Image 1 (spheres, rainbow, N blue to C red):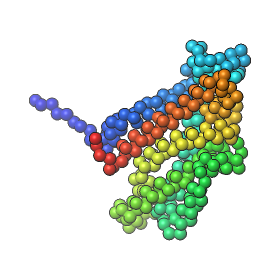
Image 2: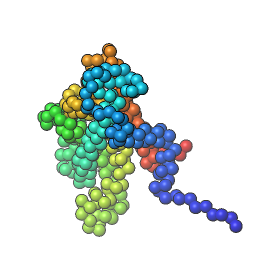
Image 3: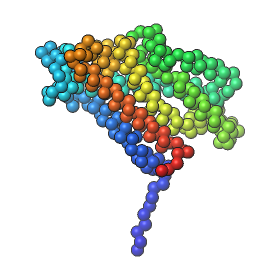
Length: 288
């Protein structure tokens, strides 16, 4: 008797299969998972404390005992970079959550209602877009005060315009579809139509953009921390580690090199993941 084989052709399974074929995205996801795990379990993975000063070991080059060397206070650099991953990833994710929440809300309302509401929101977004995002974030954190949480708010605010434009454009393209018209004819409230019928249908685009925006937020956060506008010592944030290395660059190259590599690897892995998600969810992408 011939054995029957069943193939799971559900949308979720097909999406996963398509994602697995994107080798760059799979590598990016694997590296990102390793970075997150190393940050979460940094207390277990290293025998040192990130803020314990040991002047005897100051500015030691990389060795078996300290694979990434030590800083000017004798603190293990690998431990500080792993702990700094918590801060930098937190900055990226919380900033995108803030910017995405308000950006999606503004974009959905502007695109769905149109008319004078769309005009007001669009002009507001245009004003925000007139400033480079890093300059806008710098201005906001200057007003709120230099603090890590204020930095997250500032970076989140600077990402609102990008989310708003993306969602507004997506809503405009689908709000006249038959299922939206049918929902209106059934008497559903506008809020319910937006939340239940519109947002889920543009979620893939939002997810892809949010993933890529996390990398941008990490870079912006590191830049502001480098300028002293966010985390304060002894917090081992990657941008702050780069700032602390400026006075020792000639005789302690490892102080700037390894935090820079951490930022670079994180941003590249997130971008690879975002590109893979974009290709996976793109309905017009031809199979190769």
